[in-house]
Structure formats: structure tokens, C-alpha cells
Amino acid sequence: MLKDITIGQYFPGDSFVHRIDPRFKIIITIVFIAMLFIGSSPVCLEVGAVFCLMSIILSKIPFKMILKSLKPIVMILAVTSVLNLFLITGGEPYFEWKFIKITDQGVYTSVFMIIRIILLIAGTSLLTYTTSPIALTDAIERLLSPLKVFKLPVHDLAMMMTIALRFVPTLIEETEKIMSAQKARGADLDGGSIKDKVKSVIPIIIPLFISAVRRAGELATAMECRCYNGGNGRTKMRQLKCSPSDFTALGLSLLFMIAVIYVNIAQ
Figure 1 (tube, helix red, strand yellow):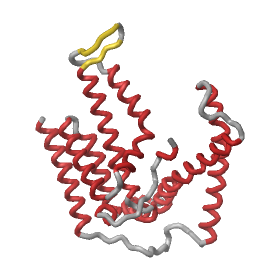
Figure 2: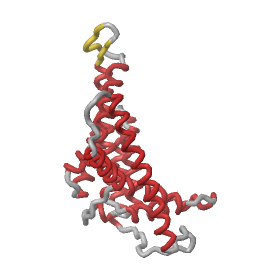
Figure 3: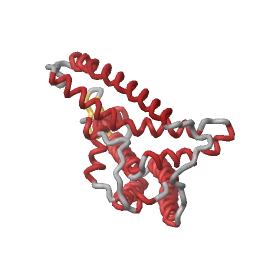
């Protein structure tokens, strides 16, 4: 299961989506999220699905990687579908037995929420798949730069967010190594009751926490050795520059957004 977690991973490429300015990609991602949650009808989800599918094709990211990013949320999807299926009792009943009641409204809401979550994860994962951590840091810092008026440490916030995202794959790899080491020592991490499984997590969490603290210290030492002092007076080797294709991509996403709003109002 841990190998299926692809959060924070970057896949180098030269596709249209890879070449989009990271600032525009963040804005387009926000527009896409709003597109999914503003719409309340199947047509709105269809528009979002078309936009998501088009983005995946243009990014040239294999569909198996998108499916791989969905595996860790299977349990969330299952819980969401069950809650919506049994807690929403309005509409025409399909099945009714004692306190259990399944209606058409519950089925509709359950399917609607599952599709929405799948599109949300599949679409937003393209941001990290097609954007390097350094470019993502620069983009977040530039977008948050107006907050410097309020004396907020914009550069530090952007750096912290990107480092946290970057270390997700590293911690996952470290967890796999710890689990393999524990199994080699005879630990049973898969079998037993729920209580035994909870207890078996402790020998994994403690070494992982120690390893994370050690890596944080090593990273801080490396930054100090390179005379890193934050954003004050810091220059950038690569300057972010807008291109006509960036405005084209943003305009296209806004057209989809307008279509969702129109459909939502018309119905």
C-alpha cells in the first residue's frame, strides 16, 4: 500500500502541462477544485471530468500513475459511500428493513461524492506530478508575495510547505525499510487482531519519528553550511516568465468554470 502513495512525487517531462508556468498551474488547480464543488448536478461533474481527462492527456502522465494515486483513498471512498447511502433517507426507497433504508437520493449522493473525490485527487495530483519542488516553492512565494505587506514571512512559509511535500516520498521509503527490518526480526505486522495490529504500529512509528527528526537536523545543517538565510537578498537562478500558452491554459480553465456556473444556474 505504501508503494502506491505518490503524493509529492515529480515526474520530469516536456509536455504542455509541464511547460506551464507553476504560478498558473496553482491557479488552474484552484479553479478546478472550485469547479468540482460549485456544481451540484451530474452535468457539472461531466464538465469537470472532461477538463481532468484533457489535462491528464496533455500532461502525458500514464493513467496507471493516476490510478496508483487513487489506491490509498479507497477506504475513504468506501466510508463516504456507506455514510451517504444509509444516512440520506429522502427520496424514493429502494430497500427498507427495520432501521436500514436505502433511497434513490442516497444512492445518487453516494455515487456523486465518490466521483467528485476521484476527480479531485486525479486532477490535483497533476500539480506535483508535473512541477518540480523548486519551481513549486518559487510559485507559492510569488503568489503569496502581496502578504509581505502584513509582515508575513512568505518565503519561509513557501519553503516549509514545499519541504513538507517533498519529504512525503522520503518518509514513505523510510517506513518501508523499517517495516522490512521489523519483519526480518520476526515481527508479525500483517496478522493478528485489530489490537495486535495497533500494537505492531508502535515499533514502526518510534524509529520513523527518530529518523524524521534526524533528517530535519541534517537538512538544517546543510542549509546553514550553504549560508542559507531565507528570502532576504536571495537571487534566483531561474526566473519565472509567463508565455502565451500559460494564458491560453488559464483562459481554457476559466471557460470550463463558466460552463459549470452556467449549468448550475440554469438547472
